[in-house]
Image 1 (cartoon, helix red, strand yellow):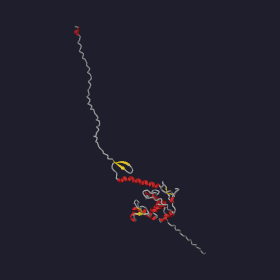
Image 2 (image 1 turned 60 degrees about the vertical axis):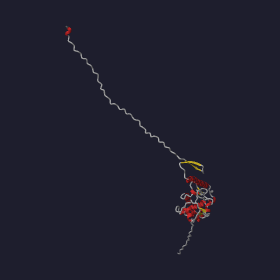
Image 3 (image 1 turned 90 degrees about the horizontal axis):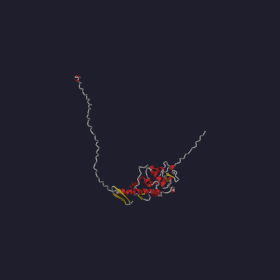
Image 4 (image 1 turned 180 degrees about the vertical axis):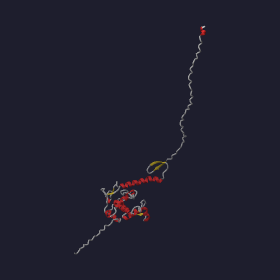
Length: 265
């Protein structure tokens, strides 16, 4: 038969496309880094009981109540009263000085601290020209500076911690320049040991406190202070004071004789 003579068709092979195989890469496990919050070290609060001892210090004289950590020594409490009292006395006495021109009293310029005449002009002194040293000017410098006399006796000699020089007090106590200079030289302690417990023309009892300036001032400086105090505060005349202190140099007039020389021819 025809059907049997027809060649048989070869079987068709089905091509199956293989799906691409996906390579599975195993990822390494990621370690999660967790930042730890800083741990604050907390110290247990230590309770400290501080006991402050406050002592009430009562100043009975001034009526002031103070709080202090401990009681102050009696001498320190006393110094709070004594020191301001001396300052107050010095201010009162200094302000109550004599008027310029009274009994020869000069003035001290408050700004320059220099001795001036009543009209404000510089004080040159009378009779000083005959001496090689201007003792009044030098004495003013020592009084306000090196010797620090103004700190106790006042800038204008009105007194303070130390006695006043104005109002005739200086000449009443020391009528002569020599006693005045000796007192400044020795001081109260030196005077007591060398001369006695009293000083001056009125035999005042020395209570101490006056320093001695022997070896601290030169002879010119020491006598310059004496002259300055006696002229400016005591009202003495400069020439008389210098003469009393042995400081006034006497002018010697040299007699010059001329001899006429005649020549004969």
